[in-house]
Amino acid sequence: MEQYISVFIPHVFESLFIEIVSSSKSSIVGVIYRPNTAPKSDVDVFSSTLQKIMDIINNEHKHAVIMWDMTAALLKFGSRPKTDAYL
Image 1 (cartoon, rainbow, N blue to C red):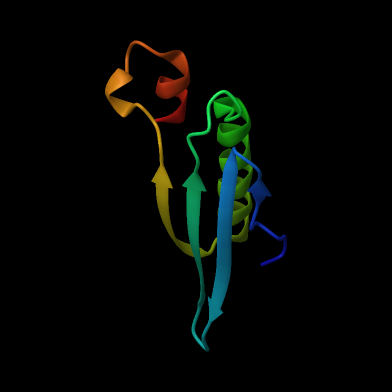
Image 2: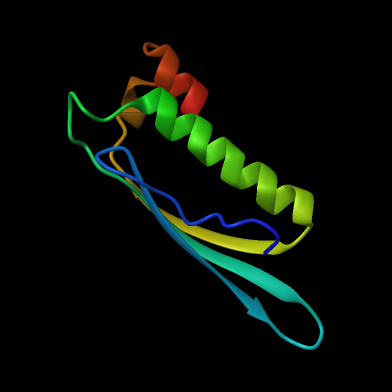
């Protein structure tokens, strides 16, 4: 990976990424965790950090597998702008 994309922001964003390289291609595998530590958790910081990571992976044109455990009220879609932006 050209840039380091594993990120730890206390109470907001935790991630770990590795790159698996073979003779034919390379893949990025990552896991992301979004703690629900209100009021410290910051959805805006989480979303912007996630977007930066996705941009890095996209710019490198590599296959990626990303798994996550994110505490987000997805059923609030349509009534909360931050949930809408996240989706």
